[in-house]
Length: 272
Image (cartoon, rainbow, N blue to C red):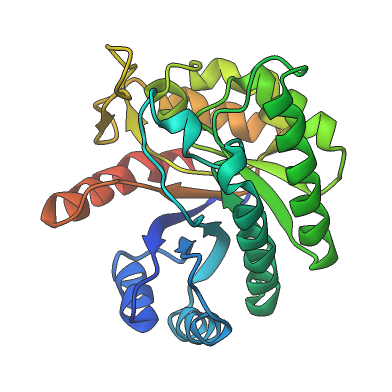
């Protein structure tokens, strides 16, 4: 019988890593993605590792936050998010290289981030500059024995596939956020696997809707209330050889977040 996929949750590192890892364990989960701030220090990393080990939590990827602004919409997003905007590219490359060192320090196999609104046309000067920046990051990751994973969202599946091919290193992967593909209006996530499924190494199990205007993203939804067809998506992932973690993400806070995470756990359990 095939081994079950591991089930985890997306978390944000605060001032108390032990409290954070205890919350993950209290859900009955044994893995987490951790959002790592660009201001993070080696001492914070050591405290995180100690807490994760103490609570039996496996950190599946370090989600690397980037310095500078990020506006999550269609009008300001292309000039603020990821490595595409030239103004912030150098400091963000440095931040990702530092995150790779942190991941290696605490034994996490990869770092993940949003690269931004990668241009569809490979002749675009922004595309070419982004590829060069990503090659620098990928080499830094490789030197530290970790992988670099793309969080899906702002780019079309074929553009993401082309980007991976043009970078040309063998330590690249995709953290599939199926809701993002919908919320940015880029693809149906089940169909997107036909384009880049072989590169999916991790997931954000999140649900959402297509956008309905030209400025704002589509709405994130509780799992089971959006358009992501998880009963089809996850078996298809598994059929393509996926053996990574199913990481629940719900980008709200408070009691409703806990309720929605528990609901997602119930939906995902029979699909593992």
